[in-house]
Length: 157
Image (cartoon, rainbow, N blue to C red; front, side, top):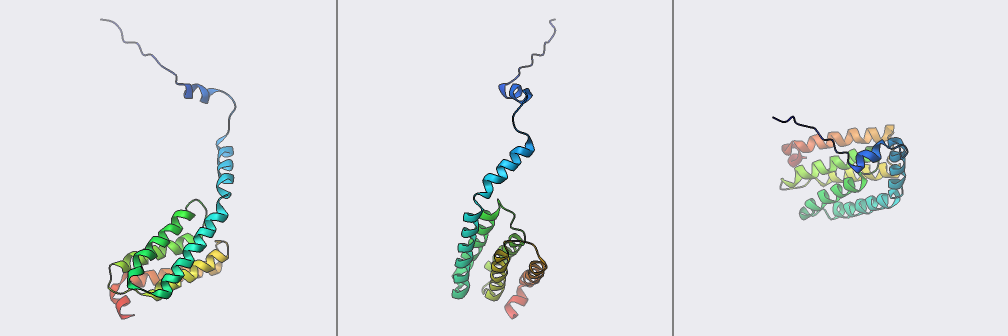
């Protein structure tokens, strides 16, 4: 019986990794951050336009606008996902949650949507930085979202 031999084949990638030089992980991360940062201004402008569309929907307060509210809030999260939006992310995520909950109801509680929209605008105006004011707004939005969780309170309120 012959003895089994193990043959190791090195790929070109394995050889390249072992060669000195190249970029460190830290350098690659720094360069990637710089490249993404170039797109911050257009992304913030797109978020601003989505907030304007949401404002128009709140003004209209049509029962058919619910799905559009969710879609626009999701769009903000998608566009902003590459950047640190700080408290704006939480505010808009909360808007997505309440929109999702209200889509299953007969009537919408538009003031809840409006409160989320106003908070998002204020946070965006502060360049998405965490502050005492933004934390207070987020606490208020959490209370609104908790209220939306209970459909009987929404219908009565």
